[in-house]
Length: 317
Image (cartoon, rainbow, N blue to C red):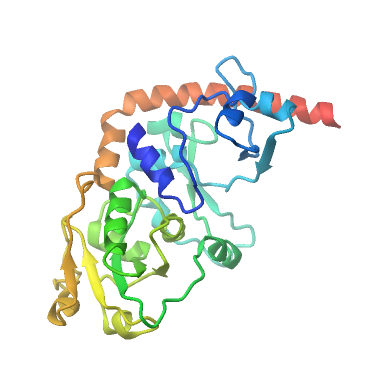
C-alpha cells in the first residue's frame, strides 16, 4: 500500500489512538519524548538498520522498550508471495487425522524465491487458526441497544485495505451498530475463481474485527442475504453495499434480492472505491522486480538479525 493508505489503515485500527507520519526507522528516546510516549513496543524479532545495528537499542538501553510475541505465519512477505504464486494451495484442506499437522504448509516456489520465508525452494502458506481467546480479544463485546439501528454489510474483505475502511466508515454512519458478514474461503473461490481469497477466513475475520467502525462479525456468512441474517440474532434495519462490481451467486441470483424486495437495501458511494484487492495485487505483480530486489535485501538483513539474536542469547546465558 502507498504511504497515505498505510496511515489510514493504521488510524482505523481500534487500538490505535494516534498515527505519527514520517516516523524514523531508528526509534530514539528523543522521538518518544517528542510525542509524549511512555514506552515502545515491538514483536519478539530483532529489527536492524542497514548496518546491522538494532533499531530499538537506544530505547532498550533507556528501559523504554516492551516486547510481545509475533503471530506465526502472518506477514506481509507471505501475502506478497501468495499474490505472485497465484495458486489455490492455501484453500486446500489439511488431513485432520495427521498427528503432526502444522499451521503452515509448504509448496515449491522456484518462481518467487525472494519471497520465501525459509529459503529459495519453499514458501509457506498460513492455515492460521485463532483461538476463542484471540477472537474475544478482537471482538468489541457489546450488544446493540433495543433502539439501535442495525446495519449489515457483507463481502470478502481480502487484503483489508483503505477502500474497505472507507466503505465500513460510511456504512456505520447510517446507523448505530454495524455487523459485517464475511464469506468463507470456498464460497469466495467459487464466485471469484483464481486463487482468491489471498487471506483465509480467520485472517480476514480478525482484520475486519480490528477496524474501529465494526461492532460484530458473522464468520462464514452466506453469499446471498437470507432471512436468518436479517431476522436472526440481530434485527437488521438496513443492508448496505458499495459501488464495486457485484458478482451473481452461483445459482445466478442477485445476492441482495431479499433486502431489495423488503425495501431495506441501500447502495453507497465511497471516496476510495478505486482501491480494490485486485488493484493491490496488480501493483505487486507489475512491480515484481522491485519487490524481488527488496526481498533479497530483506533476506540478507534477516540473516544478520538472526546472527545478532543468537549472539544476544549466548551473552544472556
